[in-house]
Image 1 (cartoon, rainbow, N blue to C red):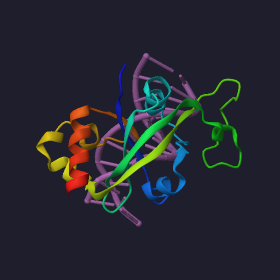
Image 2: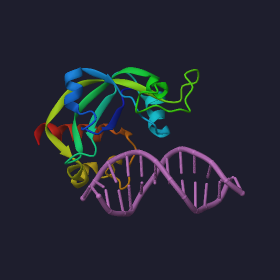
Image 3: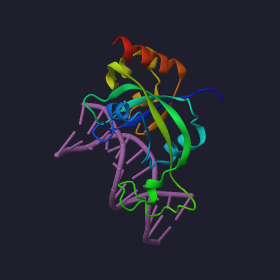
Image 4: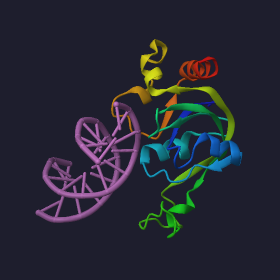
Length: 155
DNA sequence: GCCAACGTTGGC
DNA sequence: GCCAACGTTGGC
């Protein structure tokens, strides 16, 4: 399997692309949805491209690019009682939740808003534009990746 | 802050 | 295995 592309949602109030730029790289902890977990655990490879999406933002949209820089490993916050991602049903011997690390690549000079994504004919069937699409990690087609990047760089 | 959409839980 | 109740997501 060659390089793949993803969209990963983060609430900027919690962790924004500026935070990732400051940190250089960070673990993507707290994913508590099985479909999203499966994408990270089973499909993400080092070097895969990430559209960094700001959810619950004004406006919501793709803020820039990141890159997967570590293969999936157990999300240890799941058994950290002090973490807000603590999951009492989790057994460290049999990890239920996984995460990858991502590294900062670039911040778009123009945030590509959800409305822009919806209005763009080339992005018609992109998953994030579908109504009720709550999945916080989604696969992205190469053509969509290229189009979103172009919009973000050129406005 | 509202609420529709969706995922999970748990009784049966 | 059904499904009602509940919790969360996330746009608006």
